[in-house]
Length: 421
Ligand code: HEM
Image (cartoon, rainbow, N blue to C red):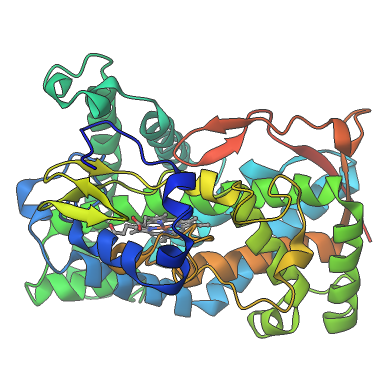
């Protein structure tokens, strides 16, 4: 069978070939055979030089490892989230869960990379930064006719590319001034080095492996890819738990037994919290932050599950539909973390029923960092506080409709009141 541009192989069609999906590497091989848009996030306008820079993938991985290794900062950021939620709790105020998680994630990245608080409400740079990241998320999630009819690309009929360029340039310029400032202070004699990720980059610049433009784009990739995805996952986990009181109670009991009520969750605790892990997996299954995996483009004619994908076509993988497919999951529309207890299924790209981070050679390099952050944030939020939705609505009346930004968010953001346990 030959597929024309714009045709769709539904998740069901692909997954009905269970033997191919689960017991062979065919899909991964297919994904490997379909080249990604060279390097860098495909929707962000980047220089041709950047696209051909083969070191980018390795540099992403290198930087994210640095972020991941920064346990001290990560712990402090989670503490900051808890302190902020604690303040709302004392005032009896509701917390916008998605927003709180977004701020915590963006701040973790900015503190680790630049040693700067980029969500400080009193700083105008911080406000501009956050607004611009949000604008990019909105634009990235906007359906664009030019993606479906490539001939329209150069006319950009909805102005998506134009606006995206404006927002991206704003952020790139901001990163550019931060780099210049740091270069300046590194020249001054009385410099005390920050020893953050930016310093590591600048050491590499001095070794001429990367230039300033590369670093600006790399930072853009990290902020765009890392913030909305992580925060939207937490935004979905919380209402699912509020609607499923049995699961919430079970998670609280596990936390109480493993680390004691009202204590922070540490990295080393995660392995002892199988139910918390199951909750995160179940959230990924029902609410994958990136519902259509980044497009691949076939470099040559590729045969995938009996379908011929002609050279040059785009292939999108519908992760959302995979998670809701009854031929893969029992009761796929019900939140049942218990299904993962005692199961070997994980999110590392080996089990094709659950690939929220992608699979193959372009799998998300932020997977370990995001996964740990999520366990620390969600575990701490439910171990420190009891939660009730704002207003008179019962958890079952909460609006669970979805809205697409860069990641999928709640159409009506969850606002819930934290009560100290
Ligand atoms: C829950 C959180 C996250 C989810 C669900 C997620 C998901 C994904 C997915 C599906 C992809 C595309 C993979 C593919 O095409 O096969 C991706 C790519 C990427 N992610 Fe994540 N991600 C998350 C968090 C992060 C974080 C925290 C960072 C870094 C700070 C990050 C950095 C990246 C980068 C740089 C890419 C592009 C990789 C490339 O082009 O090769 N992600 N992510």
